[in-house]
Image (cartoon, rainbow, N blue to C red; front, side, top):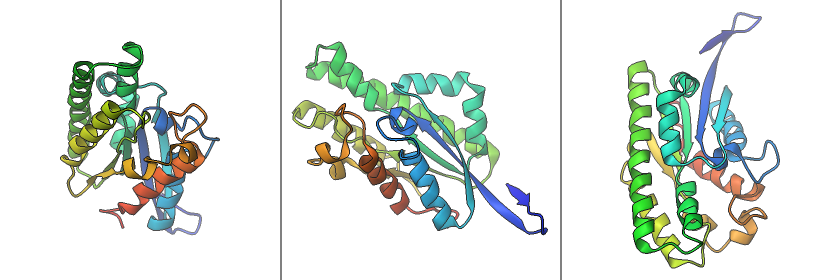
Length: 221
């Protein structure tokens, strides 16, 4: 988008749309300290342009629910159509709900089923966004936040998170990249998670934003 200034000079404005769950919303951190706000400012520095943004994060959102919103919510599709920069955080609530619905210790079969459903919906979400952007025919890039493990003492949860992240990495291409935060949170949960032990605190969100920043800004910079 081009906006004329008072002197007739034109400045490029990049549009950033963040979709996803409570991580995108920034739950657990002070206002302005979530990864969306931090990454937007980092992008402005690297791109040397103003970055307008829309935060569509919803607390508690699962992959199935986001998939449904992309089909039903015109506002979601509109903001994605406008965006040159897209971030996605999803999948953590699918694990958390599987744990809670099973009284805290789901069986491997329950986790496998939850992981399969999550991967199915995430693949559909990414495909829908890519088709939406292909119809626009304009340059963009998408970044997905890999999962960290909110249950580090539980080996079954470790396996779930690792397998989900491997699924994301298998879909990477030039302008679709995964921000790998798993190893950065592992062993540092007390430092990087908020008081609920699930969501990042301000320091944790900064770790996520820095990983996004390290992936670069192709095709723009």
